[in-house]
Amino acid sequence: MILKCDICGHEFDLENAGCCDCGFGCGGSMVKCPECGLHMDLPEELREEHERIYNEKTIFTKLEKKLAEDEQKQQ
Image (cartoon, rainbow, N blue to C red; front, side, top):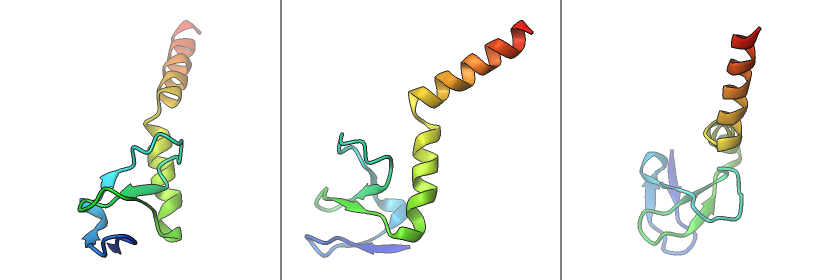
């Protein structure tokens, strides 16, 4: 999917966009323009999927999976 930056007007493929590192806990619902670095909201149709992927990579999700595995081993 092609996105257009709101500030610099650069058109780029979503695959070339940078990951959001805004630090505000957007939950993966934003991408970074590869040209100017602006954090932009993802289109509505992509937001849910990106948030799911982002949440799977958090330390809390990894810890939860590890604890569940350890609990199963103990039983």
